Image (cartoon, rainbow, N blue to C red; front, side, top):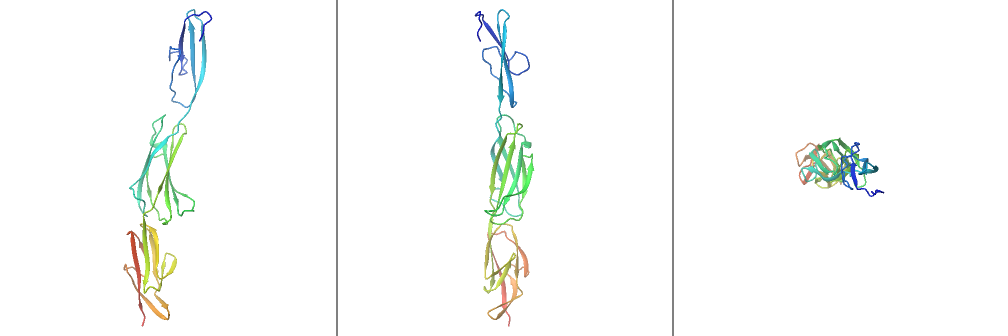
Length: 248
């Protein structure tokens, strides 16, 4: 500021917009604005003869979106069918403390590498949650996504892929030239496939089969199950055999 009479000048600031010039007395002033949007800072300059002048400036305070620092599922190690696992997340925001209500989660399932992701469950305005794993194919994955929104609409997001725990089921016959049905598929000789741990599949053996003019009659499954029964696979490798005897 300058004065045409070269009088000494004093300064008074109103930086909080309350109409009171009580926020500073130097030629420069500093202010922190918590609210996002425009704020007005005004300086009043006075000389020692009662002359005054004022000038204002508009300060626009912007918002910084939250940053997600952690997205976790537990226990670790991948999912299995029927499991209930927990999850939570953490985020930081330079303008505010983030309450649990700032967090929202969605669980997506993708049944194959080229399949579209489909929403399985959503949790709004919670800091943590639990998910019960349904029956899923071996070639799929789960994706947990967290969105964190601050009071001014700033959004931070992060995604976590969750892999399945896989097991191998092998189904064959004795003798090994006959047919069994695994799920809805009839297979000659032996069938082997990968499943998500805890998956249940139906196996069925025919009452009788004829191969090369010889009639074979079903006796038993190696696990003691009925001729048609469901098998839930937990072990890393499971071998199941349909045993036949030659009909005389």
